[in-house]
Image 1 (cartoon, rainbow, N blue to C red):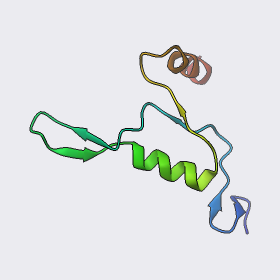
Image 2: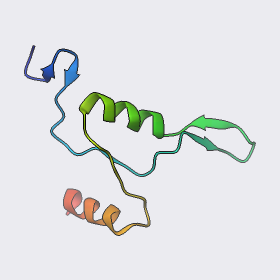
Image 3: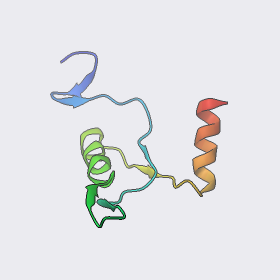
Length: 71
C-alpha cells in the first residue's frame, strides 16, 4: 500500500463528495439520452465509502460551499 490508499485499490479521499444532482440520464432537444452524473456519483460513493452531499444550483448549500471554496 502507498500513501494514497487506505485499503488495496481504495483511494484515500480527504475531501467531501459533492454533486449537483444524481440523474442517471440527461436528455437533449433531439430526445437523445446521455449518461448523467448519477452513475459517477454512485461509483465515487462506493469507492470512497462516503455519502454524497447533493447541492443543487438553487439551494442555499450550493452557494455556501462555493463561498467556502472560493472566498
